[in-house]
Image 1 (cartoon, rainbow, N blue to C red):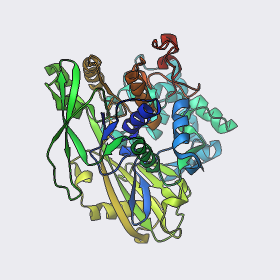
Image 2: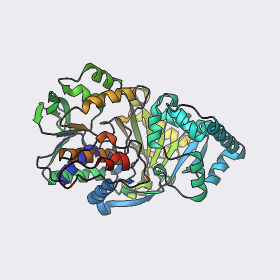
Image 3: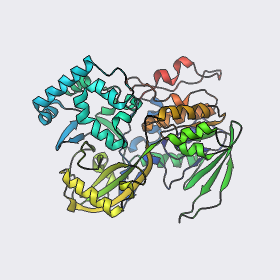
Image 4: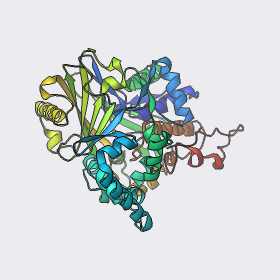
Length: 491
């Protein structure tokens, strides 16, 4: 039994079937679509992501699965992205003359001096995102290009975000490397790749196709079916209680479904609350301390094509609320119903119930259109249609209490005999899609007799070396620990 029909849950189902699982596979997804935050929504023939999703990885098994599933339906997309800051657009990755032209020689000199100062006398500890970044880029560059955007994304000051997040997401980048890359054109940092694969109809195409394959192989994917309870006998899970919803939104009777092995990808706070009998008090208290950042996207259809060339733009300005802007034609022309128009995704980071989240859709449309014009990208009057999508728990928050809370939860979950939890929310880890998939592959292989630590994915890893999941020994013994993912996997 698999809880969640996003990249992690569906990868677990695919991997189990591919490797000859004898038990039938069943996936429960509470939403109306598969793919989770990697799904592709649509409106009147326009298709759009819930945030942009590049298909790039150095994890060999993940790359192989993508190719097996979609093959020729992938297109190669050149990356064009910029940062909007103080009324100017900066190329990203950095291009030296563009950056110097926007900053000016005086400010560029101050950034260099600040960098040297912090290299000579760095923070003695790197507990927070702010400390981690300043030690590598200097205080001046941190102030310009990290502070405002980070606070906009997470809703808390960067000095309250733990350094784990930076070490996981941008660890291979520094100011000297950024300057050298800008001068030479070289680049070995995963977050700055210059081109990537992308499904021609958006990332949801991948997960819709995986669902078809799982079903064709005898599995079952139940949409609009939420998991309400998880029964256990001691430390062994025995069944789940699920409630289907009809197409018109009417709840159906709760069904108890038994299984031999279980894989979870729903958020840890919801997971812990679902166990019956419940976990110890300290585990439940830890789960209640986990925080999440929510997200909404206002997709605007414009009456003209190509208002700007970028795939996406980061907005490092407190003058507008939008955090990131997508141009879906730049991802794939097939995302648009009419080639004479444009489809622009205005992304807002928020908390469920706050002012942005609670705004009426028409008001969000007006806000997004006005901010598009304020940024000099397109006139507000050019907006001819729109669609608003809200996404709960899009990002697990790395605040000051998350690490201790997560450790408490993981210590208890690891004691369960036949239950594993994977993926971004299933592990409260800001994984990319490929790492969510990798954790699910490991979970599937564990069910089939191997021994892997699903919690060891995307911990102190690098994209510099290719990674292949270690096979179990030929005699069926677990894989050699010296070849474990912690030694070889990629970030």
